[in-house]
Image (cartoon, rainbow, N blue to C red; front, side, top):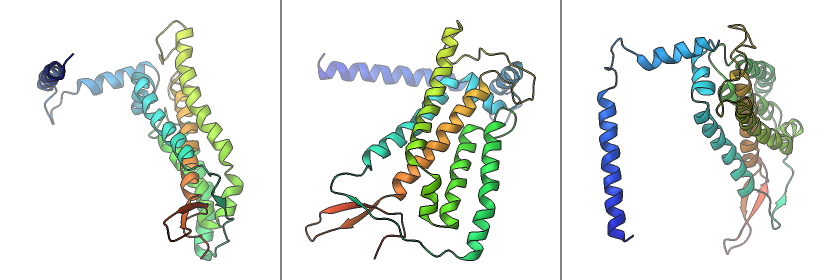
Length: 258
């Protein structure tokens, strides 16, 4: 096919898509009106599957396949960061020096750490019941762990943050989501269909596959954010000669040797 023919095909496709989008927009409910057909359908479907948090029902049931794509973006970002920022042969690691932390900051961070961690776990566990879920709770959990960096120093964070284990957990969370979707095929339904018993409404076991997919996302997000932050915190670049050659050095920001 010639270049001119390809351009004609592209132009026809773009015009056709524009016409379809324009026609669809004319059928949308009036802005600010009292007619909400999509919201009504989403709420009805969530209640039918015993999921009191409609947002969680949309994310992990009604459009669970879209959520798989969103989760995979974070997984690929963490994987790409690990590959690009890995230590090479001409790089060496310098142990971070301890830094003095203001006593009020230390006390506040040490008190906030367990509270923040508990809140993150709660948000993940109750994602199908109340506002929140695996995405939000996972970020809160990762943030709680890094309060130890604020309260003590980078070496204390390293002791509770073996990056290899978190990388495995990141992959396990992604795999769990994929396998739960495949389990629907084995049950004779479509991929990522909510095929489990819906349970008793407004309990932790309600919602069928929603709490399981939510938990898988919580594990993947928390671990992925920890891996991402570890990859960046461990990096520093030092100019080693006048020619502009640079050599990476693994030290946390603000704590590089002079």
